[in-house]
Image (cartoon, rainbow over all chains, first blue to last red; front, side, top):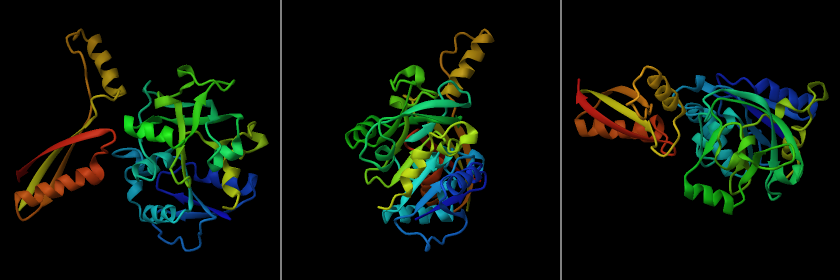
Length: 230
Length: 83
């Protein structure tokens, strides 16, 4: 399998992701420009990554303009065929804007950009990330101004019923409290997946926690989850 | 014909608007304590070329639905005038 990382104007975690996947996880990585349309080299065992950053300067709404990039049309088709897609931070915002994931990421409740390590807890094991991470509490950095996950009551209910909440913010002991919520996200949601379990989005940055030299390896198990064949 | 569409996009009433909340606090610091709530949205104006007003209206509506507003978090309204 291989990874494709989509680079939008304003993406700034694309090279971090490339480094994490290629050098730390020893995976094949192809960089893809947002104006290209060719995904013929990718099949359903592969994974497309939408990296963090400020695509199109966050103009209008975070992720709103990236959603109409030529490559995003192909990403939506790829996901429709069952291909795996992972969106981190701005990538998560793009996935929500494109309708591949439900809900939206709003401005943090405290109005500030938040950049720190947080603790995450996987909710279920019937998705590829949860299956690989298990019950372990992970420490992963967040860095965002708009990370407050929101969806209407009906959508929230279906997310719970379909066990689509993949990560919730928690404390070091794995307890989910409001005090460990860095942005005011509904239900402490840090990441979700779609019903089909091939599209994943999360605000925290696993690619910033994959090497010993960075002092944190907790992100490895999240990215590794995508390397296993279907 | 040329038309101008003035579009207002506002966050849903039930959503916390952190920007509006901060501005409310600042207005209170100006001794304008009577101002109880501020909500901040966007105003967008579009110049349109369309055969008639109905067509211009449809075009503006489509722009709002497909891109300018996200129904999960925002509502929109607009007015059209010949320019």
